[in-house]
Length: 240
Image 1 (cartoon, rainbow, N blue to C red):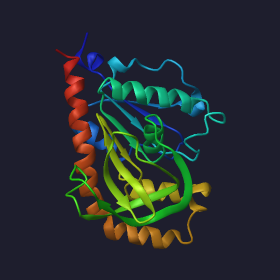
Image 2 (image 1 turned 180 degrees about the horizontal axis):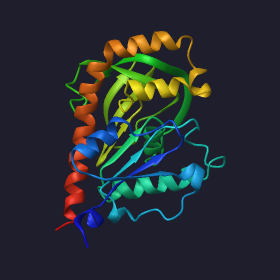
Image 3 (image 1 turned 90 degrees about the vertical axis):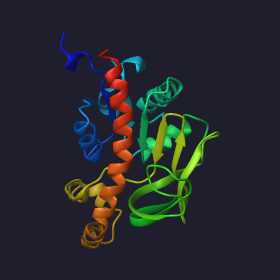
Image 4 (image 1 turned 30 degrees about the vertical axis):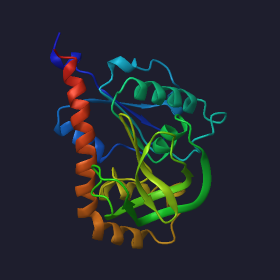
């Protein structure tokens, strides 16, 4: 049996065709970690790998509300998976909807608006892979709901309109914003009618994104590189 077949993968859960791992996938590939992509909303929560067989878990964004389990039953399976992954100390990364699901799975509350869409600053509240405490970082926001800080979690970043922009809880990191998006992926998002409906000007967002992209890329490399390193370490354990 080959090492590639033995290596644990990172499971990436998607909720919409345009919500892809982007820079996360690039960082995992750079460290030789393979990933498996699943859309549980479309295909159902069937044949999920056992937590013990995962090098990491990534839950991406999507257009549904994080608490709409009745409308999207797969979200219930994701909440359970997130709880079990953190309990097992598996590296976990939640982005936007995934950030909200991670928080809800650990006792937080979801609330509506005001929406944040476009480039805006977050303030780092605790030093982490995002940067040093007190630093302002420009990121891409695209959310209508927000979530409170789960009990026992460490707040890593806030913004004027959203107290919980990032948090750490054990082996898990939640990000309300979109570091995974590069210019090519953003262009694809802007071609999706339900995404473009949130904007007054596609051109303005693209121009602003280009201005801050180098800084975004550096922060993304730090955050996703740290996650990929943790996942690679766990993946390698399966080869010994």
